Image (spheres, rainbow over the protein chains, first blue to last red):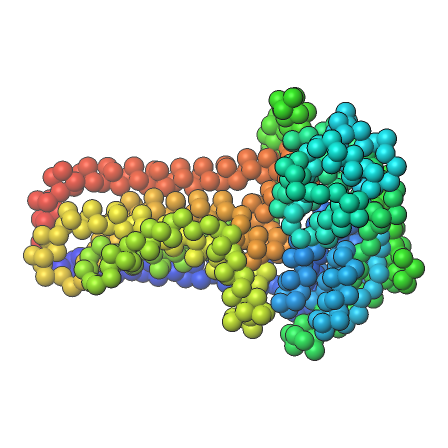
Length: 284
Length: 260
């Protein structure tokens, strides 16, 4: 009889209800719940995160202050956009003009120099464009363009990409050729592509030193003052975004530029080489 | 020349090392790995459950009812199957961003945001596949339903219950899509260590660090999980086929007898 059907239906309904309850538990429980309010979100670049610097610094800051630091590592351009939308409490990137504009537009409290390293040009060992013999980055880029040797560009509006574009311009090179290919992806992905297709590429030294898929690649040009790479840090202003944790953010910024933070940055090494050089205090 | 470069760059070692990495990761009980796997499962299973709660009733409704705009609903549902995860991620990001309409909830860069994005991605898959299954069942039992003058709600419920084992396929397909996608969770989760890092974003991260063996090792672990889930779904479908075999060809009389 139908009643029989409905009797079995209700048993199944109970099962379904149990399933739904489980689902609610799945959706609501978990890591989001234990977060609390003592955390800040840092919008930063792939170079600082992929090089392992944050893994080296953050546990010490968290142990000292009890403030959890959550890093979203993207290109500088995207990091700035995240912060301009109010989705980050701290901005830690490497493109000074954009950083200054960020503060001038009222999104940031104040910009501080934190550290620097430099960009390098990398290429295959056999160096088809003969870049290794050139003097200075202008000559190096011209050698690549003259040889029409493949060059892998980030093409993603990141700090590294912006610098690369301005370096081509400074070298007076037209970059419309098919030899310069934009990958539209992060530093690591671009290096993988470059190594895969035998192209030259420009990278920050920290990412390069920490990169583990170098193949037969090596640095072909370095040391030019134009390759200087300054990192800056800014607490996002709560006057623009009421929800921003400006006090905790500033605490993190102050710690980074304090003697303790600076010393830790100087102490971070990969394969015996120092990756970032602290220079808080503006003596850049 | 190209082959030579290829050999140099992607020498076979990552392939060889990947399985070693996978075994090492699992064997050493790498706590971080388990955390990442657990979050992947939590997020993707939640998304599938939500997709089921929305998609299955929707599929039943479309299978049973004839209403104006039904064709359009089916067309939209099928079109959404091709939704790129990055686009879903972007839309959810713009919605949950502090500058967006739901920004005050503060959900961006949380696992909840990832569940939301994956639910949107997976619901059309569950609904579309379930719709096909339920329509077959409905066609088979249409006479009985008419005979007993069951309400649409009763028909829908009966269909979902009777087809439950076959529907496991729809849920498994949805889960596969959810657990394998990287575009949406990367944008709305942010790949934050210990908070929103899942299998796929971890793989993307290790690839960008150039640690291809570890990335591939994680991929092997992910594949293992997907295989397990699908084996379960396959077993359920086998069960469903046997069930259909028993009542299927001779279905009408047997089934009608049971209901009567």
